[in-house]
Length: 294
Image (cartoon, rainbow, N blue to C red; front, side, top):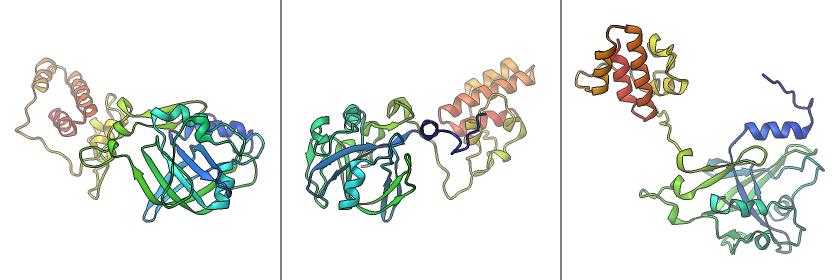
């Protein structure tokens, strides 16, 4: 394993490792204006949500590694304390990337990247019409993490008005990941698309504790077939399952018919079948299959 001590390598090298490892990162498409009202628009991937009461977003227009300069976005925020944060979707990712060019101060990235500015209601910066979620924010604080190239500037924002295109809602009125079709930043020139087969569900624990991987029977916990993810699913039940006499499964019957003469082969087949069930989200059924093996 490669071990790196920050400060012992070039900042550009460390920067590349960190961006490749800490990914994917959501993209803040920040719209600001200067004191004369000139608009600026730029994407930032050092961005996330950090609370909901009060709603808190933080992004970082870092100092450039190559020459230690700062972006117009930071200068505008320090002067006006306002920003609109727009989300970036797959349909607009190439335009958003174009907006990251270092255009002169008096050049509008809205015009250069082909976006439509919409007047905001509570702050001066414009919203991006093409973005399905636009958050008008006031800037509560800016924290500089350093003064050298690569240092961050944590812009702590509070949304005061959030605009959401209702076409991205599901039938319950929640944002549908397939409809919003977000993109996220990876390392180097890579992005990822957060929709389609890339989106999956993981049932999260609630106030009821999972039994844990350590509570699984040894034959299951030490399986050479079940993966760590499979064990995590099995350990996320709230009580150790017991055999259900009413459980019926034709494939399980076949396993017993064909492999009953070889206990080791039967166990392997039971684990393979349980793995298949788990990968299809059928945790209850997988437990019954595993318990059938004794």
